[in-house]
Every structure is written in structure tokens, then in C-alpha cells.
Length: 313
Image 1 (cartoon, rainbow, N blue to C red):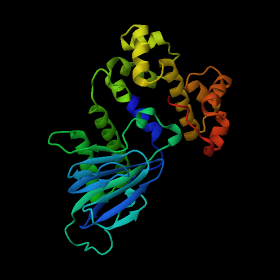
Image 2 (cartoon, rainbow, N blue to C red; image 1 turned 45 degrees about the horizontal axis):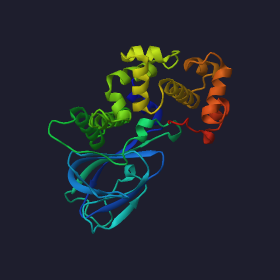
Image 3 (cartoon, rainbow, N blue to C red; image 1 turned 90 degrees about the vertical axis):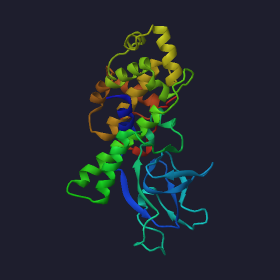
């Protein structure tokens, strides 16, 4: 798998939720995104504003996509004087505020929803996202993202046979395109660091793809440098600068992240998990896992409440 696909596989859990909502002026709605949830809004028609907990309001218009990767309390309104109705999360925004004529022409039509995230297995790429990812509409821009939005909107507006299978897949597709669009729009200047810069750098990206494609491989810095097309020293400096940790430290972190996912999502024996992530013995794997997660793998699997994440930095 490539890096972005792996990041989504690591972070996503449970079933995403979505709804098509018509909002009637004047309206104001306030919702709280709990930790471990990411919300989104796609404006199909009309305009309104997002009121963040800090900072200036964000103007939203038809075609705009809004992604809120972390928890927090937000407001949505078409007018500063609108009375706010409290909602638990954006995906449960199913009704117009009380007192409005539902038969009247809506002032905004929105696709909204939420993804469940596993905070125990977060990837540093997600930590670098801003609290509000706003992708404005534009003629000829983000054609694949727009295609996913159109398909999702059609399925939610007029569900047909197979919608229960199609909608979750489209929601995952939407998430991929939102993250891809944000990454592609980050500045590509030489002094930029972080994951957006790492994935845009051909040499570092090649090494990351190799690690994610085969985490069990006994990688050395020299082998990864060869994949990157750089000298060993130049590769180590560039990788560490962009990713935030040395190459082999990232290899170990990713192996144990994959192992944690296997422990939670499968009943594979510890020996199989150890082999899958490149450890020669169950004993060596258990020691490495406990150093990173503070609990042994068997206990991690039995007691989800004890889950912790190996430090991404």
C-alpha cells in the first residue's frame, strides 16, 4: 500500500455517517465533534459561515468542502443573529431548526457527516492537518473530488438498491480526495518540512513507499537510500528533516503501528503478527511492542482501554 492509503487504514475505524441536509433561513446550529471523530461539510447549494472556537468565521459557498479533523465545538449560521440549536455532531444534522417552513426553498443544501478515528493509532501526517481544512470550489479544480461529491450526493438524495454498500465506499473515497487535495496544495518551497513536503519529495516518498509496501523487510539506511537515489548520508539527513525522525526509527514505529492494528482487528497469533512486521521471534516482538506501547501485545489485545500509541516523534 502507498503511504496515504496506509494512513487512512490506520486512522479509520467503525462506519462513517452521512446525511443530505436542507437548511432554511434564518438558521444557526452549533455542534460538538467529540475526540476520535472528524467531521465534514460539502456545500451543494447556498452559502453560510462556519464559526470556529477561535479565529475568524469561514465563509462557505456552493462547491466548497470543509473537513474538521479534530474534536471541538463549532457553529454554522446564515446570519450572525440566528438562534443556535445545539447538535451532537455534524452527521446528526438531519432537521431544519424548529419553526421554519420545511416546504420553503432552502437557503443551503449540504452533505454532512463524520468519520470515526482511532486515536490510539494516529499517524503524524494527520497531526499536521490544520483544525479546519477548507477547500474552496473553483472551475476546473479538483475534478476527482467533485466527482466523488456528485456521486455521494446522488446516492443520499435518492437511495437505490445497493446504497448501503455504495455510500460507505464513497465516503472513504471522499476522505482520500480531501486529504490528497490538501497535500497537493501545500507550498513546495525548498525550506518546507513535514509530511506534505515528505510526500512531495520524490526521494523521500520512494523510501516511504518501500517501507509501507513491505514493513517486514530488514531495511537498512543504505537500502532505503538506494531506493531514494541518494547517498546514505544525504538520504538520512533529508528523511529526518522532512519526516521528523531517522529512517530506521520510522521503520520501527510503522512496524509496531501495523502490529497494533493486527492485534485489534484480527485474532492472528502473536507469532504471525511478529513475522508480518519483521520480527524474528515472538519474544523480540513482545519486548519491542511493550517498549513502545507500555503494555505487552497480549494485554493490548485483551484490554482496548489500555491502548496507547507509540510516539510519532
